[in-house]
Amino acid sequence: MNKTILLTCGAQPAIRQAADFFAASHDRVYLSAPARPENMADGIRFLPFDPMHKESLAQAVKEIERQSGQLDILVLGTGRQPHDGKVGAGHDYDEMLDTMMQNLYGAFETVNAFLPLLRRGMKRIAAITDIEASNSYSTGQEDFAASASKAALNMMGKILFNKLRPEGFTFRWYCDIKAPEAMQAGEYITSALCYDEKEPYIHSDENRFVLRDGFLREIPW
Amino acid sequence: MPKTVLITGADRGVGFALCECFLKGGWQVIAGQYMPDWPQLSQLSRQEPENLHIIPLDVSDTESVNTAAKACAALCSTIDLLISCAGISGNEEYDNMRAVFNVNTIAALRVTEAFLPLMQGGLKRLAYISSEAGSISVAHRQDTFSYTMSKTALNMVVRRMFRTLRPQGYSFRLYHPGWVRSYMMGTKSTVGNFEPEEAAEAAYRQFITDRPTEDVLVMTDISGEMWPY
Image 1 (tube, one colour):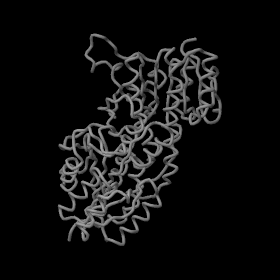
Image 2: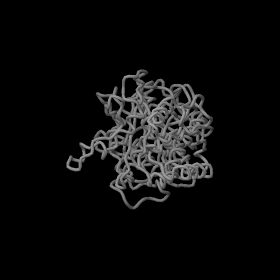
Image 3: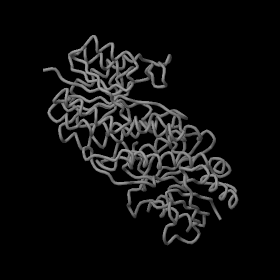
Image 4: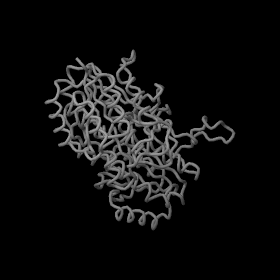
């Protein structure tokens, strides 16, 4: 048994793929999703919880603590990604708000709830996102709530990095470009990044908050 | 024929100071009023009864925004410049975070969509008050999750609107006003680098001046410097 890993937003294909990777690496894998995913690989434990409800979260924390005692890696995503139209098409703004809150308040609460267990483990927080999370590279014109959630999740990661990196936390933000030949999310999330105390701060990825794709290209925020 | 600007969050702070700048510049100003009990806008209206029009506008409420759009249509045939200035701060409790996303992020789309039909024949310029707080590259904070996330998300909302509307002739301003002694926390802050009037004066110049690089969406600060996302 290697690491204990919790992946949220288990309905996302890239999250499922990462869960499969971790399971194949004999890690202890917990997967959260609104409904039990079909065809889960052996070794993946389905852990349903609702991040919008503190009681449900506390129960999930208790369960992982009971079974594993610690959490090494927490993998975040944006589970709710509704399609909406271009500007001018009209939008359901309440629905957009619900989406952002589910994705962002949910992620925020999840991180906070699992911080004590993460502090007992290898202290890593990761996210699997895509190019539409980048304010610099995004080309989309629709899906406002989903893409705004992804961009804001990046900001959440940066603030967490600022706050927790001095404690020894590390961060892996992976941009899924859906290229089969690229390094996949699971491998990137568990890989070591450049960290040399003698290196200038700016050259060390471990001391910077970066978004990279499977070819290790840095994606600008 | 004077141009017309609509300013949201015009009650006080940068929004109110923008009203003053545009009035001095000879514009017709339609000021979105959220706080009718706050006296500044009414006082200014008495000084500029012909050029300043106050309309009730709560950018967090779709019905209010749609009603304001109808009121605007009765006042003028065209809005040349729409300035989305309303903004709030809040902690990470559920209700606060939702309110912050609603006002700082979603309202940009809500207001733009409501007023877009009035902008077809004018200058076609859309301006949004963002913040360094939304720049992931520069972020140094260790807290204020709601506010920082809301501004990053706003930048993404504006970017998506830009991708659609720029080919239709619209131009955009994404403005970081600097650390302003604002009313963001309810009362006027005693700390900050700029008075609202200074931030508004710089914004006014940037908002009315054409750029050779209108095809690129950039966030600029009070001195015109570009900020990374």
